[in-house]
Every structure is written in structure tokens, then in C-alpha cells.
Amino acid sequence: MKSLFQRTLSAAGPLLALVIVVVFFGIADWNQDFEGRFLTSGSARLVGLQSVKVGIAALGMTLIIIAGGIDLSAGTAAALAGCAAAYTLDQGWSIQAAFCAAVASGVICGLLNGCLISLLRLVPFIITLGTMTIFMGVGKTIAEDGGTITPPLGTVPSWLQSMVTQYPEPEWIAYPLLPNFCWGVWLMLGLAAIVALILHRTVLGRYIFAIGSSEATARLCGVPVARTKLLVYMIAGALVGLAGMVDLARLGKGDASAGLGLELEIIAAVVIGGGSLAGGRGSVVGTLCGVLIMGVINHGCTALGLENQVENILLGVIIIAAVYVDRIRSQDRTA
Image (tube, rainbow, N blue to C red; front, side, top):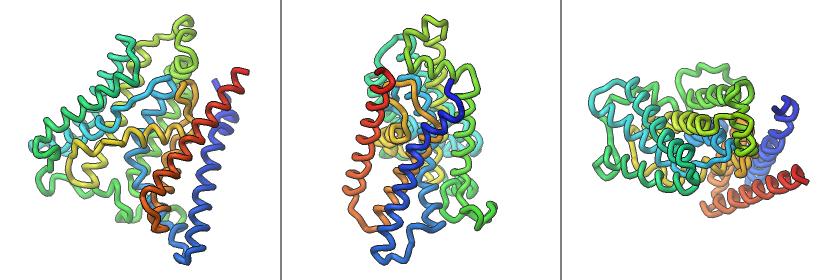
């Protein structure tokens, strides 16, 4: 297992990249006489709330990618979870039941992926590409009305809506020492701490790294590969289910099509954060940095009035650079 110093060092790259991106947009903002609106607590709050959905789902994807897998169905599974939660409210159940429905939906999606991948030993890329469309179809079946389902007015409580509110009330954080982030940000950070503990302080975490480094070697060493993969996809599914509640909190409805393309953002966040698509490497801190880098670029381009295609190009360049750096590190490690 890596030492604390080694893990901190491996996360230094994504953290430095985050600082560079923030400084770049901050300088660009000042140079265009926008009165420094980018480097403000309001901007920090906005980036934070925009990062909640991708951030929570990316924590689960971190586990999957470290284990040498991938999940292209994460986006549509999150949308399915949102639809399940909205349907639960529409049937007169409580918001607590809606949370349970969302998490249960995510776990079932993860269980299906895990079974097909670990028990049948099929390629994760192809399997999750197939389940991606299955989950979207199930979501549309639940929603029926054009793929969306809107629960009755008043069934989505205000405390859930404040999950992704830029200026939550009351200001319960020690503002101005810290920006008064919406509670979704603190939920994301709390879940990140739990995932980090799983990775670095449990037997399951050691199994995940071992499988990602070399599945054949891990199996020879007695690691229960199939069971571990199944558990990893189920944990990731639970996190995806929670991420599905974000759309319900933000829009007040479930949308079966809301997850299209989300899986690419989730995977990109892990890769930008130093996760290796070859498996065996990744970190929670790096993933959070990757999520924030994408959030800062998104907000920075909007603040500077840049076209959406500029944002797409910047993100693409960063992803390619991250993959190239990962390849260089892999070559150095095997040399």
C-alpha cells in the first residue's frame, strides 16, 4: 500500500493543475476589466454546486477505474434513480422513501453491471455500453410523459432544494471564513472521506488496488476477484443513485434523458485527477480536483463570455494531456 506521503505526492499534480486553471481565469477576468468577478466567494459557491452531481458519481467511478473497470452507464443510471425518486413522490410516499428508491435503483444498476462483468467475465466497456441504453429505457418507462416525471407541487421540500442552491439560507457555515456552500457540497466531501477510508484503510481497498494492478496475480494471491468487483459496482451504484437526487433537487422533476453525456464527465474527472484507465491507480483527492477543474473551466468560460466550443476544446486538451502523462508514468514504472 502506498504511504501517506506517496499518495499526497500523486495528488499534487491534479491540485497544481487546479491552481493553474483558477489563476489563469482569474488573470483573464482582471485583464478584461470584469472587476474581478471570477475570484469571488459567489463564484466558488457556483462552482461547488455545479460540481455536486458529477463529484458524487465520480467517487464511485474512482473505485471502478482503480479496479481496472469502467462504467459507461453511470449517467443514465443516475437519471433512472432521479426518475425512481420522482415516481415515489408522485405516488404519495415521503422524501425519505424517495431517497431510498434512488439509492436502491443505483445499487440494482450496479449489481446488474457487476454480475455481467464479474460472473460472466465480459468486457466492462461493452457491457456498460449496453446497460446504458437499458437504464435510459427503464427510466423513460417509469416517467412515461416524454421521459420526465414531475411530482406534485410541495412534495420536494425546501431543504432538498437547498442541496444545490448558490446562496443557501441560513448561512450556517462560518462565513466569511469559508464560503457558505450548499449542503450538497458538504455531502460530497463527506462521501469522499468515506471512499478514501475504504480505499486506504480497509481490506476491500487493498483488494481493489490489487485487482486493478494485475487481476491474474490478485486471483493467484487469493483475492476474491468476482465478489470484490461485484461489491465495487454496487457501491458505485449507490453513489450514482445519490447523484440522481441532484436533478430532483435542482429541477423538481425526474428526467430520463438527463444523464446522456454525464458518464463522459464522470470518467473525465477521474482521468484528469490522475486515475489510470489501465487500473491500479487513482485517488479521491485527485478525482475531486478533476471535478473542480472541469467546474472552474465551465464557469470561467461563461464568466469571460467565451463560446461553448472553447470550453469543449479546453477540456479535451486537458483530458488528452492527463492520459499522456498517465502513459509516461506507466512506462517509467515498467522500465
